[in-house]
Amino acid sequence: MSGSLKNLIAANEALKTEISQRVSDLEHTRSIARISEENPNPVLRISSAGEILYANKPSHILLAYWHAEDGGCLPEDWCASVAESLRAKKTEERELRCAGRWFSLTLQPVVDSDYVNIYGRDITERKEAEDQIVNYDDLTGLPNRALFQDRLNQVLNLAQRSGKLAAVHLVDLDHFKEVNETMGREAGDQLLQGISGRLLECVRTSDTVARLGGDEFGIIQVEPADTDGVSVMAQKLLKCLKDPFEIDGRKVYSGASIGITVFPDDAKDSEDVLRNADLALHNGKGDDRGSYRFYVAQMNEEIQRRRSIEDDMRESLENGDFVLYYQPKLNINSNRITGMEALVRWNHPENGFMSPADFIPVAERSKLIIPLGEWVLQEACSYNKGLLDAGLDPVKVAVNLSPVQFRSEGIVNSVKSILDETGLDPNLLELEITESLAMQNADMSIELCGALADHGVSLSIDDFGTGYSSLSYLKKFPVQRIKIDKSFVDDINSDESSGVIARAVTTLGHAFDMEITAEGVETEDQFCCLRAMDCDEIQGYYFSRPLPASELEAFLRIFEDTWGLKLRQERRQGSSDRRNVTRLRSTI
Ligand code: C2E
Ligand code: CA
Ligand code: CA
Image 1 (cartoon, rainbow, N blue to C red):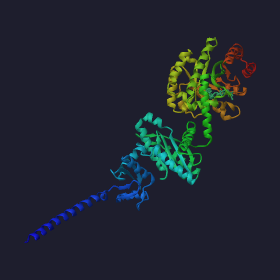
Image 2: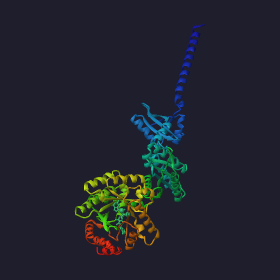
Image 3: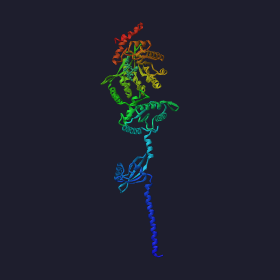
Image 4: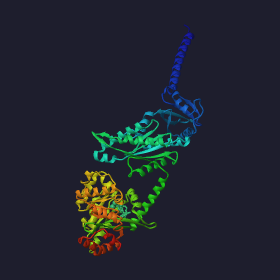
């Protein structure tokens, strides 16, 4: 073989090797280039002006979302992010939700170039787990307040645009606290779970049921036909919560109250909606549990009025604008004044004298009744002690206890320390609680009355006949007196049933060793009728109106020395009482 042929073959071999090397290099380069193609996550290259220079297949979901399937530019806010990343030479992270999935996108500026690479990652699972924690209530699995508000905003926007109705029902459980306190937290949790299940059964899939916190649930009702449709839903909700739940083998009753607001009327934003429903709920609670109530625009005015009364009351408590009047009570058997009821009056700096009916309910709701009630108790005890010190015969002073005050913590200690401070004999203090208050949670009332009685204080049941007393309970109450409500006294002569009730209460009370006082006695006929029934004591305009403290003292003195004395003498001599009080009273 010639030398030149050999050279040619060698050159050819070298060429082959080089070609195969180059082919292999090219393959390698191509396979590297395919890395982006093979990546299951989105990878994109974007120029400084926001043009899409490259996008792998999995990016198409993003391109579709950006309406950039055929190339072109990213939306403006993304262009801004790209520019910022290039300017600052910094990696930027953004999250994007599209086509039902979540992506984390990292914008990576490439060194010495004017483009960025975007690397995407599907983070849907993580986001959903986070969302569960952030937006759902652990215990019931229902949407929480944050998600509820979100949905409410969407529904409100829609309602504002379409003009179609929507409603929010705020559901507050009536007896949850009692269950939690008496049966324990676990039972409370079970109750909440049971309730959430029942609520879900009452709604359509497009509605939202959420737990807003504690024992409060919210329901967004979408597109009811009209407000009747909203009422129907509220009734359905109440009904489904009325039946007992079975917890730890016991029947547990929850019951609920509902505040409702309908929108888009009356509300600009979701906060308005919630506030209105809350106003409706709390305007209803207290007086009529177990019912539903719609928000009405006047509620705002009512709240304003209450607030202004509350503010004035606070000031008046400090300035001493409250005064006590005392209404004497006549014992018909002994013809002596043996008691008086303290009745509070508010000498309002602008409105003048105000009746308790106008401010006691406001004080109850705002809890101002606690300091006010304490003041009344203190003032009444110290006044009564003053009468004794001034040499008058002992009389009992009766003080009204409001429901909030009676159930407040420390009521027993408060009464005891006021008696200690004023030095009044506990026998000369009587506390009045209304029949309806006594019978609500009767066992607890009996216990509280017992604790008060242990300090030597007497108790009476006020407005008797207006509540629904269980008579078997009545005898368990350590009370010394029943006060027959004025409504029975009013027509004791004209309406047979009033007379029958008054007589029955008197007989029953006496059988339980209690004294009977008739309230609101205004006429001689009523007086005679009550005396014939063997009623023990009368209170009312017929004998005396409530009097200011100074007048009462004078009244007591004059009565004892003159008319009281005469009445007793005449009674001993057997003369009729019929005209006595009238005659004597006319000279007062
Ligand atoms: P109440 O405890 O039933 O008090 C009796 C009310 O009947 C008093 O009204 C009294 O002035 C009125 N009254 C007495 N005799 C007659 C009568 O012959 N005819 C008529 N028409 N009325 C008569 P008042 O003083 O306006 O008190 C109303 C209610 O306000 C009281 O009803 C009581 O529930 C509450 N209240 C008054 N003072 C206090 C207080 O210091 N604390 C609390 N918690 N409530 C009070
Ligand atoms: Ca009373
Ligand atoms: Ca009364």
